[in-house]
Image 1: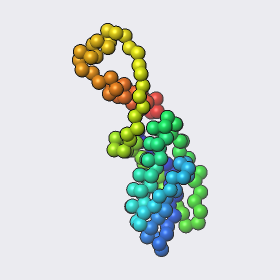
Image 2 (image 1 turned 90 degrees about the vertical axis):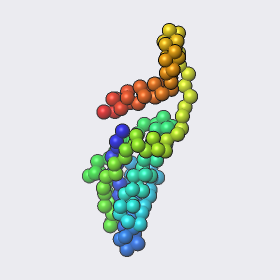
Image 3 (image 1 turned 30 degrees about the horizontal axis):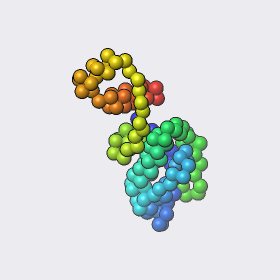
Image 4 (image 1 turned 60 degrees about the vertical axis):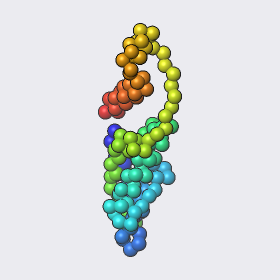
Length: 134
């Protein structure tokens, strides 16, 4: 899942470094010693913020339009692109245990074919999630 959020960049250290604020993600602030580093750090901070929400079962906040974000003096707005699949694969580790009920014949089939129930459920739910959000 790819997400985009507008971010406000504010220069500091005589224009070399930048603070980054993501208004749609309350408290999501980062920065870097160069613009490239600030963008990287902003993407990392925003991805972590969103992943925490997803792992807690909360919805992903809707992104504001670029025209709706008004920076203070000396600030400018740009988009951050988040690759949540790659970020979750690298950093996501919160798992929730779920019990399920299936027909006995299906259980026998799955066990005889050494099917990993958790893996199948996760893959199926991820595909459904992506389909609904598309």
